[in-house]
Length: 167
Image (cartoon, rainbow, N blue to C red; front, side, top):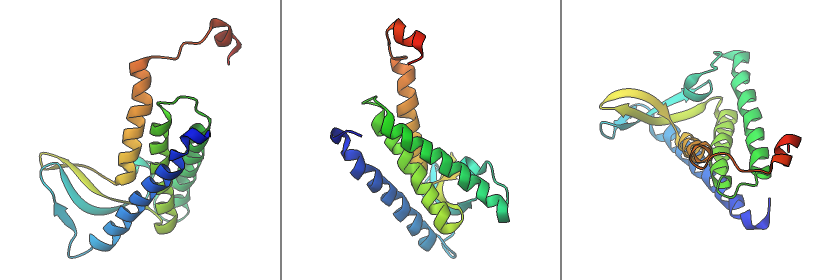
């Protein structure tokens, strides 16, 4: 990574820190008798543990099955790190950094606590939708920016000779 992108060396750890501090806060604050806090029709605070991947997918229960989401998440995080280091896209790099920071935050949380700490209870007019965390916010913003930008700007133009060679 070039020196002009050194800001990522500070931003990414800062984003990971914010995520882990908010998860620690949730684990130490949102316990009985404070099980859930209502913040309006669209958001509440409710401590849950996610033993699977996103939205509880790939949850294989207790015991050795818990290692599968951890290994999948670690593999994806390594892939994101490689993408972040290798991308030449100036506008996409910060968005990949957000995705990477969220992924690392969730991996660290899973390693420390055996599950990902979720506490932001999203609702639609009082009806529950899902529970997430700050890392999920980073990942969502990053994904919208990194992949949404492709849809808006279209594919990069390359000379036909490069496209034919597969470069």
